[in-house]
Length: 295
Ligand SMILES: C[S@@+](CC[C@H](N)C(=O)[O-])C[C@H]1O[C@@H](n2cnc3c(N)ncnc32)[C@H](O)[C@@H]1O
Image (cartoon, rainbow, N blue to C red; front, side, top):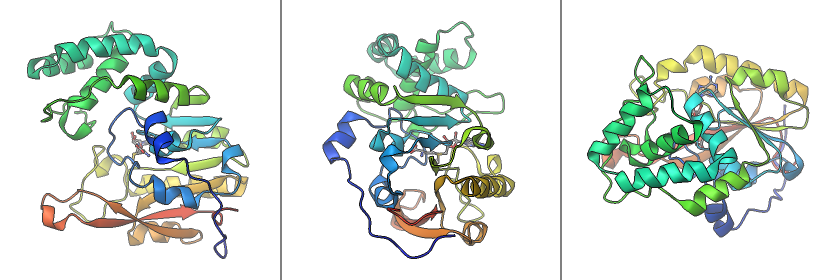
């Protein structure tokens, strides 16, 4: 349980170092790029000395903004995780493949690459990572949606001149990942390795804001209420263990109820989730903390 707010003493990285030095190398649904500036003032005291753990890393916006020295990054999306590993460990080869894809890029190439990505079995990890980044940069809205057979099925997006190879950005991401342990795992595995004092940022697929809202690529059914409850139980267990915990989710009664024993902060997230542009406005989200910011 937490009590009154404490003064915040967190030095933000300069915008320059945050954007150019390391930033997500993929567009990711639910990415926190636009929210980072509201999350940084909510960090616990001494965060720069703590191990940084993200069990739902996705595009890793918070990780890249903070560039912690020690980190554990994990996600259930295996293709995403193997891409992180290749960008950390074999970047020059990934870049060579990506440059070739960039030179060949056309509507037809997109669908050929998508087909090869889904069906070819003898592809090196570096080439697979390059295909992952290429498809992410050129597909519709950077979605990562798969069909029942696990095949990526997002159509080509409409970009005049997509930036497929960002040499500096990839190099910066690779450097930032050097001190990170990268895992393919579901969030429950945290129970096996989280230690007292770790800073853990949970950014799960959000609880739906209405019965019809479905703005994630991982459909609401993939991460339903039972998962939200299991996640809350993991949160509780890590709270008992002495970890510092931050969790993002939608601002809905069910989430407030699940985390009623903890401190709940509100942040405004600009989101284009409504097809009707007039109804796109700031949406509030909750940030659940088990500590007072700055403490
Ligand atoms: C909201 S996104 C995270 C966005 C990320 N913070 C960013 O800035 O890009 C949620 C992530 O959770 C992952 N995920 C879904 N179910 C999971 C599970 N059971 N365990 C771990 N990760 C999961 C998805 O693959 C997705 O990358």
